[in-house]
Length: 295
Image (cartoon, rainbow, N blue to C red):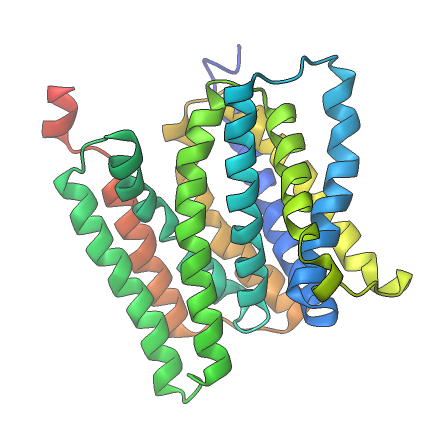
């Protein structure tokens, strides 16, 4: 039975890819705490590019057309800033909380798609956004009640909101890229342009760490490439509506890896907020019976 008929293997691959990327986040948190978010992000993108570039070249590809290259460049720059703010937030917030708040990105992407692609915002998207915002407020309120809403925490919260906004734009750009480029090309240019973007500030911000301090970054780079290629394989063989809900298992992986590798515990308010955010995303990104009958 082919993968197009039975999505079991793509589902397993997607779950595995999400697990790899969640583990990558845990290693990047350790690296960012040790090296700083900027240096860790630059090293990760550079190493990942060195890994994925030969994979792309093995396919004997053609150089992308100008319009495609422009799309690669826009997403590479946006993705670089998205990753940098995300890794910075990891240095200020627990892993599970950061992942939970980042789940508002699919909600934000609906509104960006309306703005940039002319898509219609459905009523369900509005209700979903309200639930998602409520989930964020529950998580933030939990930190306030525990007396943990310090200036450093506020910076982390601001960074993850900015990262989620950029990730929402990234989702829109990714939809456009999927129509014009193959996964290996997308990954190569994404990592390459992100590296060039970071290099602009290298003379002022980058400090070469000792070799032993780059272990976590190297592991994170390998996990990044493995997760990206695994997810690309899965999405080429099953419908997005089947696989997208699995994205939310990232919270479970983040909670597990945060506990095992970083000694972090998930609070009740974080769990409650994550449930509200996921519920909001589910409502916003699925169609009701009435909408399905019209389309």
